Image (cartoon, rainbow, N blue to C red; front, top):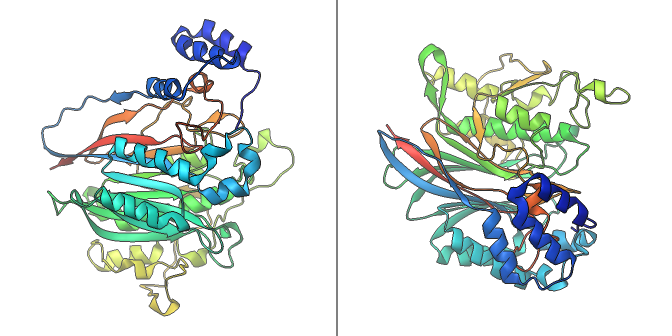
Length: 434
């Protein structure tokens, strides 16, 4: 990653936005090849990423915890895509160098829950040893087939008990739109102080390909079905489903103006007339390549509300209570699940192939500013997110993400103070115990 010929543009932005004067002065220093030490860069990163506190008034008992989400950049991917890092010092790209920076960051954040993407399998022992020494337990899921990296969730053993773990494979045999090897993890954790309470933590790394937003949508659809299954509590008034608090994190490879991002936030998407590569309006596209009415085949057993149809039937038979073995009623393929373990509660019809998608989870994003940046994809942008549901879960603090102007002095990542090509996301939450 490298940014060139920005000097004049930065100075213009400095005049337009005086708050960026500090960023402009640093950029000027770099462009004129003046001394700019690692300490200065570290100081600057702290300057553009302050903690922002949210005021909350609680009349209930609360359980406070913090969460870190971080794409840590797998070493194999650096070597496979070396051209992307031509402007980085070779030393800072070495794993032996990066891992020390990474460990220091983990210690400084001291988060109660850590969600990682791009954890290399051959480095798993190092992650486990280091994090175990810091009091964490963890769950790892490698991408399927030949890939060498995956996702992981670590949690502090003295603060949480693991009640349930689910790993999700987006590669579904015989389904063209689900032929990629990305994965996700869903955990149900209980605070040790309040063992009857549950918090759902999920992380994922969605497909990068900018021309296959249809695949991104299908992957998110599958993950939401699993999150819905694990987080379900029961039904309330008017048979409205109720869920445990949920935090969903990861590298989604989506910008806020995309249809899949809007689906996550709004809970609805009418996709049948959207352009397949980008899920944009046909009015803005040349030629026609509609999505059509069917996103995924009915054989996968997921309805238009991102729910497992057989799991819904099972709930109806059990007074709308969740059954702990309901994962056996999922029709999704999993490399660790045998076909003879699959159960079926009914052959009843369900709605799918309507050209519409919904979900009931009501997510908000920790980062609401569209000009926030978490990585560089041809330009500074945001693709990493922390989503959360508001039921009993209140956002207390976030570590701000920089905007485009503030990112200009960061000429390359990884660098001597940042071990990845993504910025870490950090937030603190308060769980209200009612």
